[in-house]
Amino acid sequence: LAKTTQPISMDSYEGQEVNITCSHNNIATNDYITWYQQFPSQGPRFIIQGYKTKVTNEVASLFIPADRKSSTLSLPRVSLSDTAVYYCLVGDQGAGNMLTFGGGTRLMVKP
Amino acid sequence: EAGVAQSPRYKIIEKRQSVAFWCNPISGHATLYWYQQILGQGPKLLIQFQNNGVVDDSQLPKDRFSAERLKGVDSTLKIQPAKLEDSAVYLCASSPRTGSHEQYFGPGTRLTVT
Image (cartoon, rainbow over all chains, first blue to last red; front, side):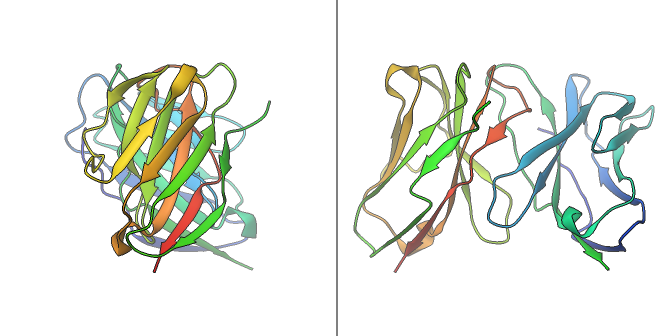
């Protein structure tokens, strides 16, 4: 699986847009980019997944440039409840391929 | 739709004792995963099942950890004997198909080994 690099922590304020960038320079052709969110004392929750360009759902947007060597998770107008750890994962979804989590980005949203 | 269920939520044992965790995946999900999450780290995959067969257990410490998924539904993860470094949250996840990166996680079991 391609290794990912993301900031260890970020701070933001309520109502702001938060962008978390993940670097994955060695991404392979068949790899997808997936983001998870984890609150304290809970299991990770799938947020969004993409292959190229832009993906948007009711929770977030995922921007992937043409070279796919990085991706940006965008959270619009965050609230205190968005305080969590966000994980970026990259890999081939073929059978038997493991999901490998890194350390994630700890987002702290302040009032 | 019911989520992934795990029990117990918390467990405290002494080192060298044994412990077992139970997981009930989302109905119809063929693939089941067990992860170990040490405080401050991301989850680490221990074992992956497809129905009742093991797909990957390369990171499972087989000298002390074992897991089974009888009948391809519920699963149990056992540690015997436990060590202090096994203190962690044990997460179960399921997905409709093997290899999918869209997985659904349970709340986890927090294990403390003293």
